[in-house]
Image (cartoon, rainbow, N blue to C red):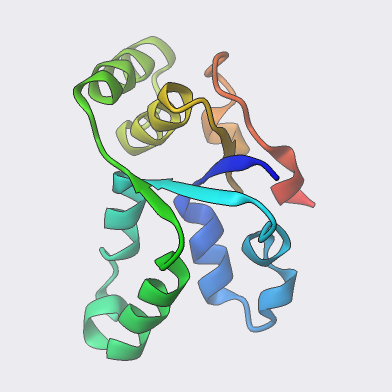
Length: 128
């Protein structure tokens, strides 16, 4: 069992899938899941979440047993350094910094966005 940080793309894929068993989130259920506070924010930033109570409840159900990691000063500084050094998107920099600070592998469907960051471990099986 691994401790892994889930990127927002994993949840978006899961929510869009008609057959949930085909999603990486379903396939990875034997792991300990963590998310960045920024991923939590992204999940609640869509219009449909606030227009449909059922969507809010679905997200809450998915997040029920997932540990949400706080946004710390240490994470903030590293995210700033990653953005400045590798020209990554600010949100991706925060997620990458969260993974690095907490010694977690990142599961994402957008590995290309994170590849320039050498200290980040990416869990590639999500692309299967």
